[in-house]
Length: 162
Image 1: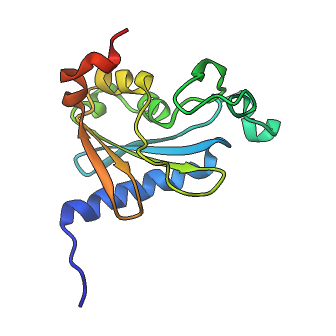
Image 2: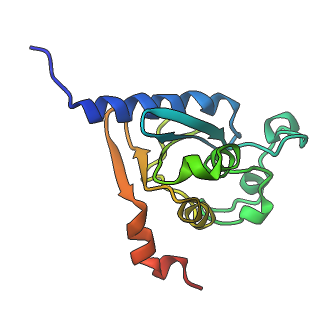
């Protein structure tokens, strides 16, 4: 018997698959891909990598954060990369971001497994809030994902406070 999935789940997985495809251009530590969608229109995509014009860490043969043994979520000032969410937001117009959905996929470069409980860093959360993104959909497995309403980050802003 064929398992029927809801239309929204099919659509969410479709855009998560797109976000995952852009990972191929990503960094050597944790590979992230993002896609911004408003209505049924794909607005932009982004991947975690060095800014345009800078040499990519894979070309350099090392990740500075990994070399310094910095844990996930810390030492961003030591990283060459622009995060996938940030890059996708930079490539989108402000008008297209209002009310949009950001799809995010993280894959560990060392074992090709999805990053457990991935979510935007605090800096990217601020940028997502400011851009007017309505919700963020984050892949946990090929079929499972979480949906976060950005308004909850605003209401529970203690994690954004100093």
